[in-house]
Length: 425
Length: 173
Image (cartoon, rainbow over all chains, first blue to last red; front, side, top):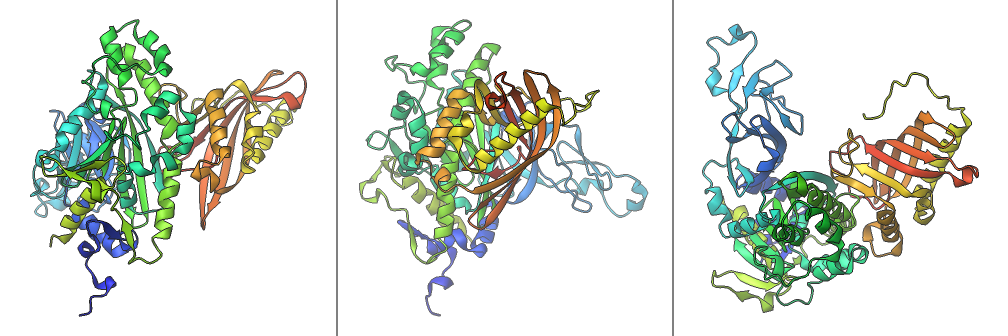
């Protein structure tokens, strides 16, 4: 057999310092990714604040498959395949809400919040044919850490906490932006782009593009915010691999752990009116914690394969086809007393300024990604480079690489995991 | 919808105050298709609001996430973004053609007209035609000086798919 490029298996298209352009354009590879990655590993489905009460539910997807995430009467979380066991109709078409259960509109088979089949109309036709106990909605394994809820089709995969591993520390740190209160989802932008999902997976660990693609946003913000995001030449701004394809990109290292505050950092003057408003009901220490966290944490935590905990929001990707991806930018805020509503109002404005289909940042990202997908159709065997910073990477005590925040260490980590999963028989 | 759709006495489209408002809406639509954002922004009052909400049913814009929630300051920055040449999405923006029709005058006085309408926009870029359909609300302040002084105090665009994934846009609705 000749070793031509097109005969190579997907795993052989990924090297330490490059990947083949075919990874973005080959429909066959996409089908394998759905089966070998999205239907095998832990996929983020919800934040617990989206399911606040018994009966809360949320519709979403694991890979391409529609699921419903629910909270039952006892408070347990479930992820259920959104497909009636009778003839396959979806049993829920609402994005979120409160329900006692789900009734299929076609023949009114009804299911409980945990997926149990509760009722079949005119059941005499099924006597001696089916056992209701065998016809629950298909249930995915569901586990959560730090409020982040994940589901998997693979009943044998490692526990979620093992999969997250060293990323757990950074999830804990991310949640500190509540300033001592829990965080909650405030709203979401949804947008789509005509490109492969991995282009966006790479982007949240791509510090290198920031001042170029986001020059328009940088030009529109106050000088203190622009200065905060000027990490291109800051040697303390680093990206570190965390294992299992996860990585953390610390753009604003002094905000990596928001509890570490020696009191010397001045609060941004743009928030002076907010400080005055909060000070009416909150003590100065609490106000300072909330204001220092207005832009979220100082890092993007990239969790393979579908969610990034990115500064002050969650970025969730959903693969649609080899050349289409849908993305959610989920705004988060503080779940505190009425006095902190002003914090959330300001966080919504900050989110709107950059994110979403009409933000000052997202459309420029999407334009860059669209261009990658179009360009990568040329010479599919030609390498896509992920080698920036290879010669200056250092290895930490955990045996994993660290390099400058503009380097492609996080992409290399994600592609190493991709290669491992795509190599499994 | 927050607006009443069962107003007891319909306001005729031939009401000259309504005609003035419709002419302003059409002029605005043409400016946006031509991407003449500087002139477009001059159609708003200083306290004017331009909103594209995510939730199509509410009007509590300040306490919810929007796609666009622009006061004069944000609108000015947005015009700069769309015109200064740094934003790659705006530099290579889709060409758009929009029609605004199915007008329903909601109220009309000598000072102000509130007008609902339907807007259908086609955006063409790199071989793809995207459809953007939405309900639009315009609140228009009529000038005692005549139609040339009429200004928008509020524009809200409620897309039919505002809660679903839409393309990231390099133009304005």
